[in-house]
Image (cartoon, rainbow, N blue to C red; front, side, top):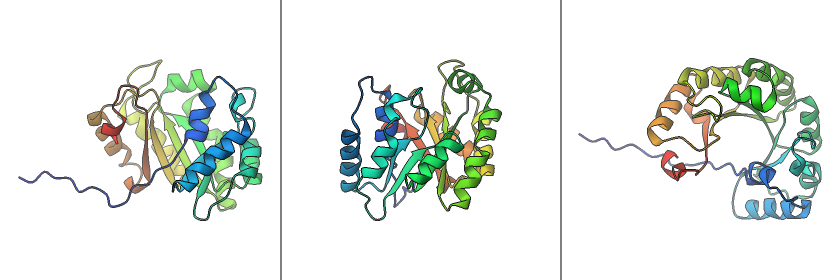
Length: 223
């Protein structure tokens, strides 16, 4: 019996280092270094770069220079420059910074949602309704990111139906793409298969993407 799986002819890479990577650095990273990083990434051929996060600098000081970075990067034709936008204030800043895509984020873990942003999953999604509507009105691409879809540092295992529920909520907001994230890097290939298959029951699989960390050396296997 032939059990070979047809591999896709095209793979899309969303580079999130300038945001997801740098926001966790303890030492301050100057704006000019971030600008150079984004420019090097685009010149290397990457076509979707998450370059900024318009969140409160009180909570994420590394992203305080996001507007400066977005204003100074070399814009290459065909490259989408994304920005994380947690609320309308963040959206307005992203719009002014000429972001081509805005990113909203929620968690599949109720415990993580409460610990991380001090509200329930349902409340967090409701906060994004205005952002999603504004993104569509301004013709911006909308990407949703779901954290802790494979495991949570507070509650442990995350049920498949919990992931699917948030996928459905993101779909109903009008997301063009939904990112399923292994936030703490605990996923295995078989688990990844199960989560993605369940998510695909709520959203077209061509619009699903994976965000994997190599904490236990499983990122490439999961991909």
